[in-house]
Image (cartoon, rainbow, N blue to C red):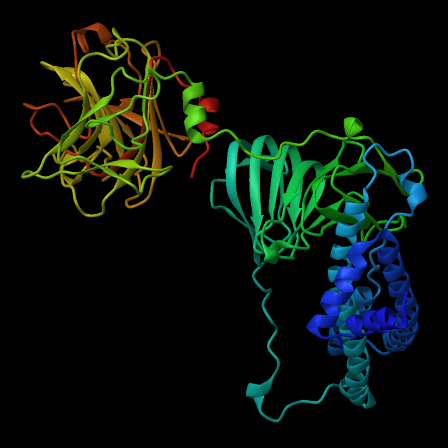
Length: 596
């Protein structure tokens, strides 16, 4: 190492180097493995100087901790202790060459060059933080002497002459929002022993602990890092905007934006810190932590609460390490012995629906020759666009069907003839759809799906203002409640309204051997059966003959009743992702739809 390089390293670490100097040193560090190691030796020498400053600061903190108890002293001491802990953060170090002997994924010269570049950039920020922390520590010690020792001359605190200046007990601060659920497939959650619904867009606050019991979920921190969880997995969000604690299970961390760099996974006995990378962390049932790097670099170091004291290690792409509690070390393991991680959520809402093998599935992803493709059987039972119906690009998962109908402009989507060559809604079936209701636009009921021939048929929709039965005050009906009707025989009403101007998932399940069930956003809602001149009752199908209700060829309409009906009950808003199944969907299938 030349004197010029040595001086340049010191200038960089103290923040005195020019941009040209930093570029010169960066090129030197990344050019050769020996240069990277020489650079690290200088960093360690700087660390010895820092240790002397730490000892002096620690003595000051220790002396103050013996002072009489005072709330202000306690607050300042807590801040000093925090700064002291930051000052003791370990410098990044590379493994010695002997530690890599026999590793099938040993770093190449290029890997060391990449490591040197990251270490160079990271150590600069680390040293600046250290000197800032130590300087703040010294200043805070002086300030503490002024604000803590003065009141101790009297046994009682001074009393303000103005009563309005009396101290008010502070209220607890609201816990900060630190992360958001941004994707999930088949996800089921628990808090403790209690199942909870964690839907898309759910915001997590600090110190919340959740267990993902089934499926996959993606959590994005406030800084933009993502953690892909693979069930079973128990996690807790800390008060940091870029960290997560993994108690058990697997997660994959991705840091693809500048602000997400430095993402931390607190695992059992070990902290894994991102250096611009993608990595997996696993904690097994015995509490043994493993880290595997898919790309880039990570640093593994002892956790703050860990009794282990292994040397921090930097891992590169293709490396994996396991923490050995018995020895307190990180052992290198072959990739074949490392846990297998899922690196992305592949199953979409469309895939979940198609896995249910529907008779028809219309996603409204554009229209070809005036028709919306039936993705369950392309080329068969495509929806024909009728009247003023259009395709809207603002759907729930893409495009949607828009039907802003009125008396002057009637629109809908239609399938001519029975589905699947012989499905007449005479057997058990399920209908699901995403609904978006325009606010304040409908007085009548509105139809999502409807079939009718003569006086028979079925219909699924929501109620309007005119749907209330004024002659029966005991009837409980509200606007936008979902309903399923058997024309002229019975109505089945879900006892919860669908919100307006928001996408909502609605399912009706008709089991001719049992009853009618409804689900809103994956949750089953109470259903009441109403028949003319009879009070509301349980939503059973007792005494109803399905063959007398839906016989013959029937067109399937989306967005209104068939022509000739009175009223036509057109939809006012948007519909999307409509699927019809020739069987009963189970509650589990419905709950596992990836809701948005």
